[in-house]
Length: 247
Ligand code: NDP
Image 1 (cartoon, helix red, strand yellow):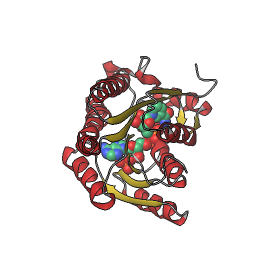
Image 2 (cartoon, protein in one colour; image 1 turned 90 degrees about the vertical axis):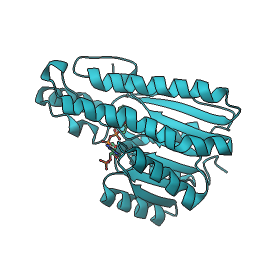
Image 3 (cartoon, protein in one colour; image 1 turned 30 degrees about the vertical axis):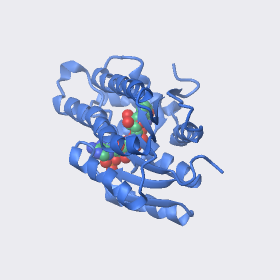
């Protein structure tokens, strides 16, 4: 039996891309899913698809920039399934731009979703996981969490923050007397809706070219499943997954 069977997994940003692919992969291995994002029509459709394939999923419309909504999401998971085994902190946005263009609203959005939203997720599930003395928090960073490049400064800063938070959480939980695992996943170019949020025409064109060589979201979903499938005393802390031909 897969170590994913009957695990309760919350996925933020489940309405498209990597989150949606992870939902399908984990459902096929017997997870009980709690799907979260802002677009209810997408969540509903995904829930139906999962259930038609014999899986288990519920959903809750959640904006991760709201601490209250993220707390309600965790409470809903506990109310429906009685435990939270895994949180996949996947919701994220990438409106790339050069600093001199002063797209301050986009900077705020990236900081609010990619960093604060991720922290709200950790805050919401950690008390239950500590009580259970087990759990797994999987955070989506990026190659941009390892490198910095022109036009990506703020996005890179948020994804570096994700790695710092994941490592800090790992160290804190390692001495907590629990079995709470952390996994940081850093994808390269993956074919999803992420680049649609780029409003800078020049950078949008550059990304459209780069993303011609992108890999499928399912490849990241398989990596997520691999990390969860390991026994509880084994933590896959860091994974970089990129197209073989990406520089
Ligand atoms: P998508 O744009 O396809 O998915 C992003 C998801 O985040 C959507 O489901 C969206 O749902 C959700 N989301 C955005 N804002 C919020 C919010 N405020 N509250 C709740 N959910 C929100 O992109 P990906 O699947 O590619 O992105 C998933 C993660 O992977 C991101 O963190 C991204 O940075 C990371 N990543 C992606 C790479 C790629 O090349 N695709 C490379 C490296 C990292 P909704 O709009 O319905 O709320």
